[in-house]
Image (tube, rainbow, N blue to C red; front, side, top):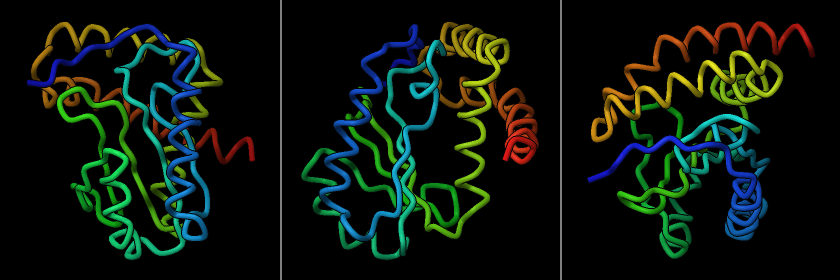
Amino acid sequence: MRIIKVVDHNHNWSNDYQKEERSIRAILQEELVNCFHIGSTSVPGLKAKPIIDILLVVNDIHKLESFSKQFQEIGYKVKGEFGITGRRYFRKGGDHRTHQIHAFQYNNIAEIERHLAFRDYLREHPEVCRQYGEIKSQLAKQYPNDIDGYCNGKDDFVKSVEKEAIKWHWSVR
């Protein structure tokens, strides 16, 4: 059973991401357009579940299936779209998940921008970042074994911040 645990920010998360990025780049090579550390572990000072979220931007989303074996060899479970059209999702670590990959084709601008704008907005707005961390901590205590309850509990906050983040993103470009 997966336990939901939210912890204080760990400065090693950046190194964990960089190590994983090197492995991914070695697998995908020319198919990879870019790779980003996203999610709560990418925001300094933000409390988070200790899972490294990775955003891959690729040339052709359909070609990722041909790399399934290599991803499995480095510990990932290949999950396909997994609820988001146009995405390919991979996760590592089973019930003790350590990494998850969200891959999108380069021209899926809305999804790519949504992830990056949210990350950057939290990095630039410490009060919103603090509020988000507190919400996640409270929800992890309230729903320690219920990922749906945890996710549903933060959904309104995340959607509200995403809207502001995307507007902010366009205002600072």
